[in-house]
Image 1 (cartoon, rainbow, N blue to C red):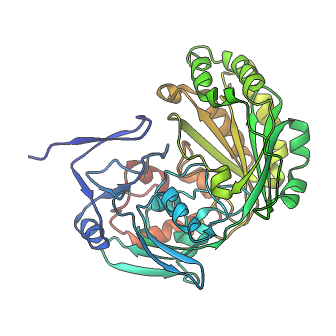
Image 2 (spheres, rainbow, N blue to C red; image 1 turned 90 degrees about the vertical axis):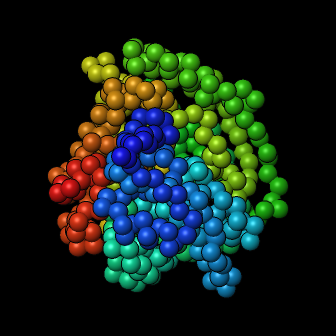
Image 3 (spheres, rainbow, N blue to C red; image 1 turned 120 degrees about the vertical axis):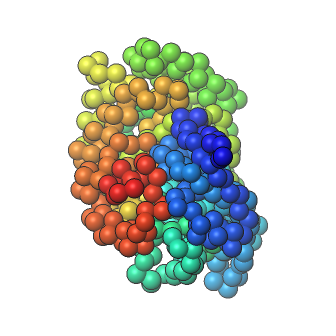
Length: 433
């Protein structure tokens, strides 16, 4: 008799029983498990806040399927296995003098998971847009090579792992470059009024918005010659204690949500009033190498032109004492350029993304900010991050993604027995399990 075991996400908010767990190290093993399974899902770092990685009897752990397969030095191409951590890939290509010019906030995600959920950085396109080809294991275990120009590519780039399982992935790189970054606080009316100008002027733009303070912490970066001298201005020593202070100040905000507004003002004055200046590669200068604590996250995107009106309404909502939508800081504001990937946040529009974080992960289900943020973003045609928390399902998503119906039809053809659907994804696509 098979004994059920429990799969647990990184912040322990998602738990599912399973019967079979396969750790794979080769493409052949990966294909064999998929062929034999009636239902199968796959996971890497378990850092998704959406319930896409488990919930079925057979699970595949791809963390050990993690090697670089090849380099193409003439075309600056690198091919790697889907279980490789993003940080390991970036360190390897930086050693060759290469880079991928748009990187997410953290480096611990696997390549397959990052692509499936549309993981992105700022001032560029999502990571998936730098994929030039991949080997895809289909529901029947056969392997299909997908290249740029293939009609399937625009559907596959962001596909939640429901069209098949990516095996090896090839990325187009660029010569490495150095960013000169300047950081500091700005009032909301200032940074908001200059977004389009700053996006044209700077190679990198990111705002850590600080709810309930009327300020953002603005990060601007420009490409420079690596030998260019700069005024290296470091943050005060005490800034490294911000997460510890946040944990203390937010400890009881699930009971007294209103105290969040007070805590944010304290955190702003203590940890976001300074200015810094530094330089480094995109990876060195902007990517978090170690997450100090677990989080629960929602993230939404909206067309760039709609963002100012949306932010005004959001500020009014979260500063109102009529609800409990007080938001922990910061809300990460980033920018994605238009692309043609069907389920991308930037599909046919330049986009602003905004993250909403709950630092009390155990009480995330009662964190009212998630509900208010989702309601307002949906009003403005906003799209949810596939790897973060959201409630929208088929009816709402069909209004947000012009190719939603086409994607659903393709999914049904490629996986007619719904092998790659778990209960959560079944609800998202309203397909029969």
